[in-house]
Length: 358
Image (tube, rainbow, N blue to C red):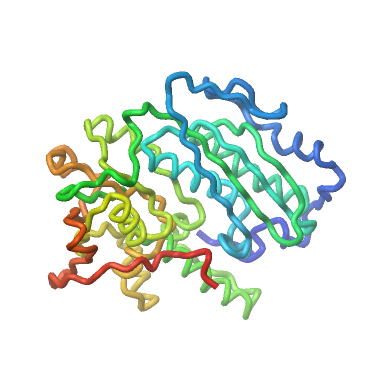
């Protein structure tokens, strides 16, 4: 995976392409232009874009709603985040929250604020990513807003989903002796970010450098183009398992475990030797001289699902390649610990990513 002109991926930095001022279209012309490719597929969407408000009908289903705000310079860096990938990722992080409720995502609204340094072609790239995600996840884009910002790019997406009341899983249902389970592997997105940050610094020193990122393809993909685990709801249903609690891993495994424990009133033992980590992740941690366990439990942005199941469901899940049992819940008084390979118990602290830190 070679990124030619590494820091010129986005249309904004590109010196040659066509640049159409957003002001030329006006607000309504811009909305028409950006939304022309959105199709309505969900039966629950009665009216989408084009009226004062969207109209939805979920009949006997419960509705789940989640919003995320992405701000340039805080949540993403356009030096190495292509706008198309950014549009895709902005949708995915919201859908992941719906998946964490054991619900099916059905609609999103998209609001964007842009400064005058962004030409229309840049917004086209961003919305191409949003459209691609909407198609991939079979969701309707039913509204939103566009406005100007003093500096940078701001994206706010609200995701809407549906579920039967009995199927919804909250954070507060974990019980003592429940098993702690995670999907996929963890830590890769954080190391992808480290690789991209390193290449950005190299580029700033030598703009003619051509980074060879072939050895980091998986990690970079996990950072720039993550996927929400919409498949897990179907997998668990087929196994006849309903999690007792669930959360998606956005801020880091340790943070999410602490959320589940706090809301459920339980403790937890997390086992270091059970953590699912990718071989490429391990080798890059060694290259950066970073402890792989520390990254795996604190990294964040994995968008895997972390959930608890009753002990009696162990037989149903133990051999499934989609899931890894990484610990179990205990009495609240026992606290939250990482049990190392040497069988030492270390109190777990949430060192996950915090957007509010100075």
